[in-house]
Image (cartoon, rainbow, N blue to C red; front, side, top):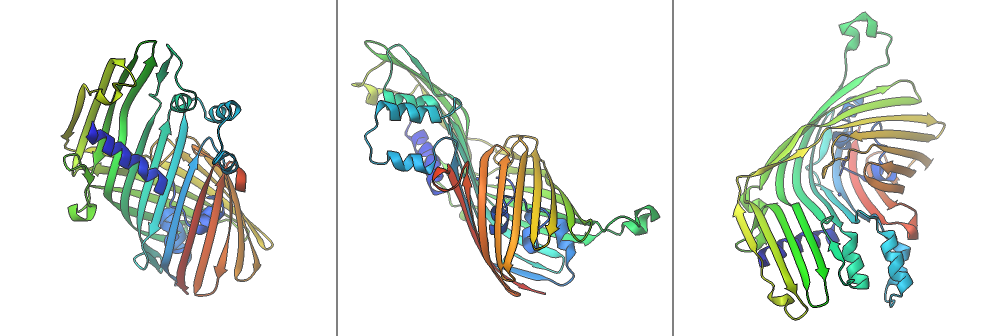
Length: 435
C-alpha cells in the first residue's frame, strides 16, 4: 500500500506547483487564444506554420518565455478568501457543496517553458524547444461531503468519480512556410488572394507520466462497524516502485518518444481581413517505453472502525513492469480570422477537437481578441474565450514593442474577473527580432 500512497502523493503534489491546446504565449493569452492569424516568427510553429511564409528576411530569437495556469470549476478567489481562517457554519458547508458540480471538483494545471536561444526563426524557417507539464484531476463531490459533514449511518459513499493524469515532455519543433504558387498550377487561381501554406514537425521526448486508469471506492458506516471497498489501477512511466521515486529522465534518455505534425494555411483576403486554417496533431502520439509500470491495489473490509483503521490490510498491492503504452494526441481543427478597423485589430478563432485527452477537448471553443496600440510601442490587448472543456476566461495584456526588442505580459482569469475568478494564467516573454 505504501507504494501506491507514494505515487498518488507525488501526483497530487504536482497540481500545487503547476494544462492543453496550443502552446500559449503572452500575446495569445492576452488575446483570449484568438491568435491563429497573428502568430509570427517561432510562435507560428504552435499556431499556424503558414504564417512563417509572410516574411522574406526576418529573425526572431527567444530570450524568455514562461506561462503557467491553475483553474478549478467550483471556487473563486473571493469565496476562498472569505473562508480562510473561519470556523465553518452549516450554511458555509452547504455553500461549499452547492458550488461543486455533481461530477466532482476538477483541477486543471499547465506549465510551459520555451527554451531561450534554442527557440528562434530565420527567414521562413523556425525551430522551437519547449517543456510542457499537463495536469488534470477530478475529486468526487462525496469526498467533500463526508469531510465537511461526517458520515451518515447506513449511507454508501461512492468516490469513483475521482481520477487524474499528469504528463511531462520536451518537444522540439521545426517548420517552414511559403506562398503557394497556385497561379502556376491553373489560370483559375489567378484571381484568388494570395494563400500561404506551412508545415511543422514535432519530435517529443517523454519525461514522466502518471494516470489513473481505473478507480472504484465505496465507504459505508453502520452502528457497529463500516465497510470499505476500494480498488485502483495506476499506470506510470519513469517511476521506480521499488525505490519509490521518479527517475531522472535526462539520465535515462527520456521515458518515451513521440511525434506530431501540423499543416496550416493563411490568406490576406484584403488589407483589412485575413483568415487562417490549421490542422494540428496529425499522427500525434507518445510511446512510453522505458521504466513503465502498472500498479494495482484493492482493499476490502466489513469490520472497519476508528480503532482498527490503521490495521486494515490490502487484499492486493502489486506493482509490475510493463512493456509500455501509447498516449494518443488527437487531431484538432483550428480556424481563425482577423479584421483591422483604423487602429484596432479584432480577431476570432474557432477550435474543434474530436476526442477528450490531456491535449484536446471534444467540445468546441470560440475565442475573441482585440489589440490597440496606444502609441507605436505600447500595445493594449484583451480577449475572451469559452468552450473547449474549460471555463470561460477573460484576458488582459500589454508590453513594450520596439524595432529589435519585445517584452510582453498577460494575465487571464477564469469564469469572471479578478476576485470572482476561479483560476488564473500568467505569461511573460522577451525576444529579439531583426528585419
